[in-house]
Image (cartoon, one colour):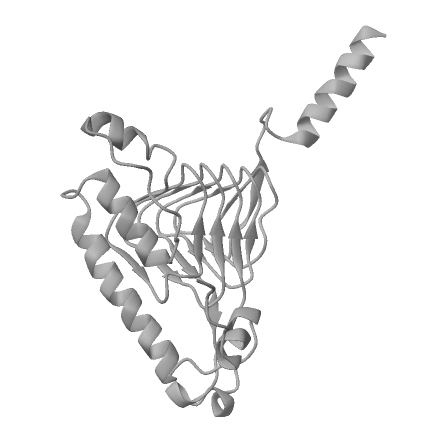
Length: 230
């Protein structure tokens, strides 16, 4: 069955335009998320891996069917080795705008203000208490107007193979490039280039990471090899 069309207000939210968060529709969606969070957080450490994956997919509205259950518990659990592993408790506004890649690990007490889409690439690791805020408010208090005024947001994208330290805050519109490391306690206000270390408030580039995964470094090493052979 096809998903119902988005309301005009939700389309504005998804596009990062001014929208109203305290409409009956969005209040109901946040209530759904709260109920799903209660079930997911309660499952951590007590439920099977299959059950936690099922509850996670319910939370983020991932309709991908689970693989058939196997009688052997170890073999059944192994079917979910590539699934994201999210420690509880976790907090979200909607859940439906959070997209995690294979092999992602999210430590406890993460917060996701998923007004707009938040993506995390494969094999990325989060420390505890990481917060991602894709939502924001107008600066003009007359327009902001408490809960009666409009809100807005910008997407957040974290690349593959990143390491986000504990207590990091990532603000709306930020992209963290592949293989980057964000030092613990940093507030990331601007894009982070691939294969760089950033830290501080606001986060600043500390150094470049030397790795064979970096295409630029591989090209430089290739040029050096050619020179050595001449």
